[in-house]
Image 1 (cartoon, one colour):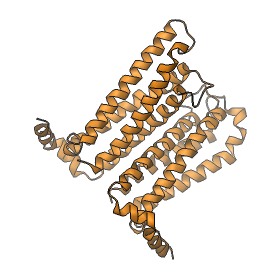
Image 2 (cartoon, rainbow over the protein chains, first blue to last red):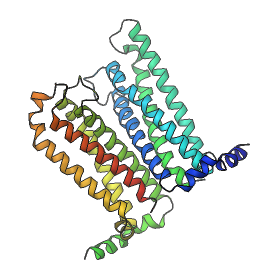
Image 3 (cartoon, rainbow over the protein chains, first blue to last red):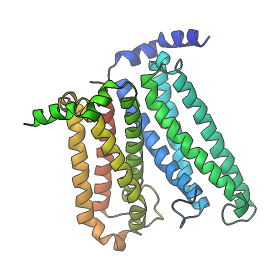
Image 4 (cartoon, rainbow over the protein chains, first blue to last red):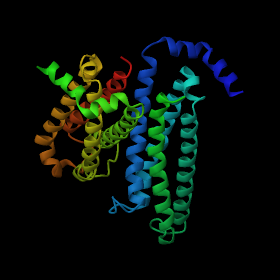
Length: 164
Length: 161
């Protein structure tokens, strides 16, 4: 079924167009890398704060306000540029185990971020100045998980080119 | 002379190991992507502040002091991994247009950074809390952002020629 979809997608006029014009794939890949740069830098700094390794002068709440809009904004760019790359090379991506693993890691990273944000939001709504001290372990686990997943996502993204 | 250096580079043990292994190059390339992502991401934060588009409430001097260690650490990772990839096929890369253009843009980005630190950054304590930022800061931030976008674009292009 996935094979049928890949075949159909690869034969659509828009896919053929992306395959024919030599500069589309490299340019869109570059845009994709620029957006992942924003995600990785934002999340590395935020996760380092959650792990207590850096940025302790800033509250978790203030860093969350600073970095989360960039995460979601960059994710939109990543999704859009990623879709163009998938349409242009459906077999290389959708049919690739590393790509599928990347999508699983992405879903987990987003779920972990949303989960942590809801914990933080509840603490702030309850009148706390920052994440409640009782949730310190949640912050550490989220920070570590997020850091490992985003690094894994970027590495998997590059390895798609070398696997099938 | 330089050609001989490139040939020698390709004949070194690490270069041969990378070109003969099926996983070393992709592995090093992944590390390179992580390095360049942190370099570009952290520089973008500062550039957008210099352009007065982001983090307006943050004093510029503080932001730069907080961000620079991330940038330099990641830059060291990107240079080492990049040098290893280059060594595996040095004569080929040196002969390509995107590689040479990328090195040129990197050099310009370095000059732009030094010019910024030698001039407008010296008085950052007096303007760093202001919004809008001075025109010279905006100029340096804009040039830097443009050059790094170019570096990423050309870097990706090297793999297609």
